[in-house]
Image (cartoon, rainbow, N blue to C red; front, side, top):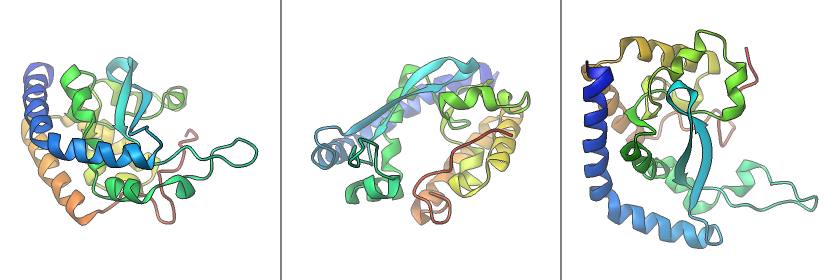
Length: 200
C-alpha cells in the first residue's frame, strides 16, 4: 500500500513544501549560474523513469559548454565552474528535481535515474531498478554515492526496490542529509563525475 499509493502522496506534499521553503536558495543559485554559464542555469536531459518511460530531468547546470579547437567539449574537470563546484559539493544542483517529483516523474527516494543509453546494457536483475519511480536520493547514494562501483550501485538499487518501506525512506532521508553535510561520495577518486557504465 505504501509503495503504490502513500509514497506518491508523501512525495508530492514534501516536494511542494520543500520547493517553497528552498525557493530563495533556488533563485540565488539560478542567478549565479546564469552568469557563470552564459545564460544557461539549468541542465535538461532525457532519463528513463518508472517502467523505462522517458522524462526530462532538470538540474542546475554546474559545467559550462566550452569546446576545444575541434569543436569537442572540454573534459568535465575543465568545464566545472567555481560556483558549479560549490553547488555540486553541497548538492544544491538537485533542488530543481523537486519539480520532477511534483510532476510525478520522480520520487524523493528511489534509484537514481541514469542515462538512456544504459538501458540496453542492464541484465534482467538490474532492470528491476525501473519497477518504481527514480529518486533524488536513494539507498545507493547513502552507501557510497558516486564513489562505489556500478555493480554495487545496482545491487543497492534492486535491494531498495524489493524492500521499499516508509521507515526505510525516512532512514535514507536522514542519512542523505548527513552525507550532504560531510560532502561524502560526491565523485570517484580523481574524477569530477561518475565513470561511464559500459555494461556487465
